[in-house]
Length: 60
Image 1 (tube, rainbow, N blue to C red):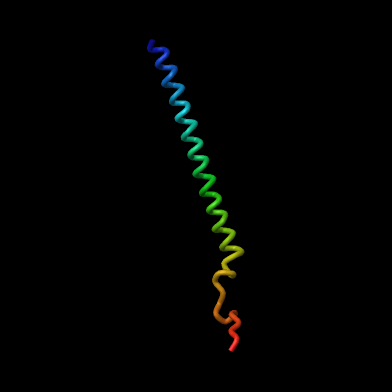
Image 2 (cartoon, rainbow, N blue to C red):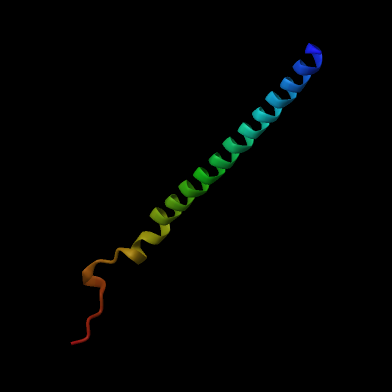
């Protein structure tokens, strides 16, 4: 009887480990996509959002 319990608990531990690995992989994927977005924004897109006032065309 204890052998069956050991096998079931080992199976549950394996499933828990796999679930934890999936969660870690998802977190790493989300963090890397956020980091990539920030890097691209800083390198390419910040000028669009933060123009100098001298660059604005004001019609009098």
